Amino acid sequence: MLNLASVFDYSVKQYPDKTAVVCGATRLSYAQLDQAVNQIANGLVAAGISKGDNVALSCPNLPYFPMVYYAILKVGATVVPLNVLSTAKEIAYYLNNSNAKAYFCFQGTPELPMAEEGFKGYQAADECEHFWVMTVNPVALSPITGTSSLGEMMAGQSADFDIACTRSDDTAVILYTSGTTGTSKGAELSHSNMTMNAIITRECFAAQHEDVHIVTLPLFHSFGQTCQLNAGFSLGNTLVLIPRFTAEAVFDAMENENGTIFVGVPTMYWALLNYEDTEGRFDMEEITEQLRLGVSGGSALPLEILRGIEEKYQIPILEGYGLSETCPVATFNQLSRERKPGSVGAPIWGIEVNVVDSDDNRLPAGEVGEVIIRGHNIMKGYYGKPEETKAALKEDGWFYTGDLGKLDEDGYLYIVDRLKEMIIRGGFNIYPREVEEVLMSHPDVSLIAVLGVPHDQHGEEVKAYVVLKAGAITTEQELIAWCKERMASFKYPRIIEFRESLPMTATGKILKKELKAELAG
Image (tube, rainbow, N blue to C red; front, side):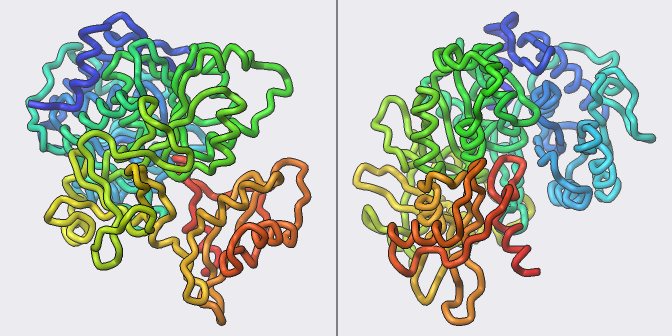
């Protein structure tokens, strides 16, 4: 038997009185959190949910998320976490594609009306039988006529529950890809996939029982789910949940809860680097003394941001790499090994990584090709999509990532770009990340996105969307000249467009497909 809920259950037994979750004024011990988990699990059983059923969950970083997440797992069912920014149409697709039998959805706020969108999606789904609303007040009645609140569902249920017996290869979670380059697909991840990735991740962090995680990564995403929720709970850590990322919220949590680990995506580090505490709200010296580690993933961290964070906050930043299909961690820079800035580290224990050309020939160190991964973290497949699974996951176990990268002589991986985002200008291959790194080194540039745009003569032209630092007045010509001096003549951008901001996913990835959609009209 192996059930992902065991990573939480172990700490419940070992540290029942220790604080498991902090969110605003709410503090729950492991025992208190487990009682709620068990009541929900009993409520699921009473509703007819059993082993093998799929149950969807839409919830920001609130205590409700781990409550429902581990309850679903304890029953032996599969968790289908959904992006909290999904529209009704998208939710209906997820519910139908996953054959979800039930759906938990947080009520939300006027700015984020999740329950309303969620209910519309639920009504459009074919097989979903139950819709439960998680309200701000857990005992309040559901605000949507004809549905039930989580409080009603838990009422009168026992606070005891035995974890269902599941096999290691049973599906624990179906994670939908972010869809930044195409249609979202549900990666089926087993109890073994998720459990091993969480345990190995905590070892990569050199995690300690006393660690306090500052959790701004959305828990519905694989990054936050594995590296903080499951990894943190497996060691009895305290998780400080931040429902919506702001630099002020992060520093407040770090100062008041003595945060030791921060895990984020590059845009979060960009915000922390550019934050100036002009009002003197925080004791930055105390924060940096307590904070021991920063971890970055989700997309490549520009070297300028990495160096700036390490200098400003005096912590090492460990960069890793992976995808929803790999649980997500596949490679990682570790404290116990040489750290190579610009690299996403070496393969974690039990994982193989190679780089191949278009004919599947393995490439020598230093040559760029598609990154392929094999090991215990690889998904079972895309749920309900056999053709897509066959295209990405080969019979010999290798998963084709669609990412371009190269390995060095020591086996460290360097991600160059997405295969689909490579620009071909006049027959020459250009990797957007290389151009972005050069632009990010300009003292006036704050954030950047580079992509190819149609061009009659060259096929594609290089265009850069630039967010400047506050007060900067750099011109298009100056930025083009900066790049022209630092890269080959076919690579530098010919078009610069200044923006106040760039479109992003809920997990902080820049949405290049939205920029491309603008170009398409």
